[in-house]
Image (tube, rainbow, N blue to C red; front, side, top):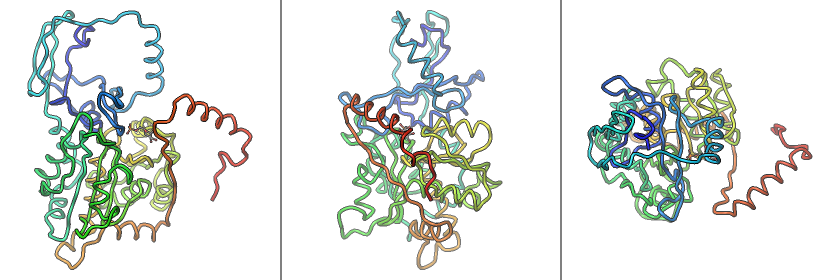
Length: 402
Ligand SMILES: O=P(O)(O)OC[C@H]1O[C@H](O)[C@H](O)[C@@H](O)[C@@H]1O
């Protein structure tokens, strides 16, 4: 289809594996030998939902800034699908083996056409090295007092986890759980939360009791590796606290932010933990509707450095998507910073210590979220329409209650 429509080249991650954040990084950073850049990207993914032939599957489109397409574009695409009468396809082109790295060149119906298969992790790791101090994270991971665990939930994060945590940062291979990417996520539901990341939750001492001492730090990412969950030993960090704690510690702990944060933002249903950090640190603060594209607008305007959603998404302006592995590296950086003079001491500063200290400084914030899964779509739409209708007659709606 691309060749038939005059596209000059297509970039594909090896084995068709690219995380959503890596796609965003590639759109923004990758330059081909002749100086060309991507104009956008299609991401084929079930995201955080069960995947495979009988489960979910979706197509996301990302724009030239690396972020999700805005509603004006998706609305236009949708309206075109209702009037389209034909599509072009170049049937004569042979298949390309996307398990092999390299460029295959064709003469397509519209002229030269290349399929460039590249390593999924190299560009992403390069970008992470410009953000974090890998040496200090390595020292933390090498400390006999520290232990680490990462659950890829059989999603695409597995294509990055071994390269990042084991090869680059020196974690042991046994610290990786479910890090072989599978087309159906091994039959699991790759949503990194307390319900679905069961194995990690148990290993971290939050599930069924076990005699094995849990690791100091645990994390998981979702099917396309843009969401994350952070856990300490027998301790859960809410996504709302996580973004606030990252923002509060970013300047000291993460070299990319050393000269200060441009601002911070959260989605409307995310707790106000970040608001208080912004107030105390005198940072620009924004509350946006749910959806990462709204953060992207602020970032493109140079007004936001760190942001997050209650749905386990955390990220920064290094790309225009939330970024699961980035969030793990951010937490490891904070732990490395807090323990920099303490790695030989009796006891490390733990994830729980950091969160308790944060609450003591900024206060504690609460929110709640209910997921209603696999409900009848029509009935759900009706319920939402009803809620919207009721809104105007409910006096408490849109009021801030302290
Ligand atoms: O990018 P995804 O992981 O697919 O998430 C996309 C969206 O899913 C849900 O609607 C969440 O409530 C949002 O907070 C999130 O932005």
